[in-house]
Length: 411
Image (spheres, rainbow, N blue to C red):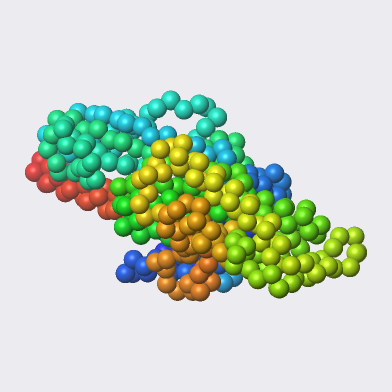
């Protein structure tokens, strides 16, 4: 089995409420992301993005990892790990520093971001991301890349995403018990945005809603930068639970009925179509109208979309998303979702699956894989940054050694 380092592989692990996905990506010499392995297992022991049975989660992760290792023919040692849950919160902060050399250097940019992130956060919280939005130098605002510009003082606006430390520790513990190292924790909705958004959409203003089984993860971009993140702890499981209660059928059957026959908009279903609904306790199955099923599902989807709309209204960004909404995740796959969402939001809506991948892309060509493929994109960028920094430090080191050699030769 080939080791990860030799092949320049990056691995994403998405631990969701209903399923655990692992994707192995190979970074090709021309900087493309090629999918070489995928592992998928039903998640057990997870609830709304949080761990509620450590051993069950560890077993599920191990099975998914084994599956991906077999397919990619490699030994996985570390992963980029997605995290979600209602404990995630965000804040926008500012930082300001004087410019040392009249011209902005990388050190100045690092300093100003460090100043912006130095806000006090409580001991039980952990910083996940500090993402620069834009910079201003003296009187000039809205600068995307300040390096090389002249000025006296520089200000940075950043978006900070934090999570509950205990929640993060639990999910990392599950990964470490499988003999894996978590390279970095990444907020799921941010990861999804890497896989499904275009630069034009981020510039114009877009809201990504990753509709999972236990949570809906939201990230809002305007002007090319992340402005708001949130997690709503209701999602697809609510729809399944409604079907189970109203049709009096076990949850597992309710999930199957939802996936196969449900439609989010009742106008799209004919009255004549019937479906078989299994009963509980050995009673015979019954025949029900598919239209009745749509009547159960539609109000719940309406409620989910309204919760998203309310979140955007509260953060004051509802009028700034000209490109509309991008829905992804398993709960977004239902028939009629786009039409119904456009009706509720009065905005353009599309359902997205991962883009910008090659290799075994048919395995991940589905909205449920957006987060895990996004983790690969994130990891690939992190690797590139690391390599660039290494090259810089190596070149600085070689200049130092040459100067030292010159001194030794002279004296």
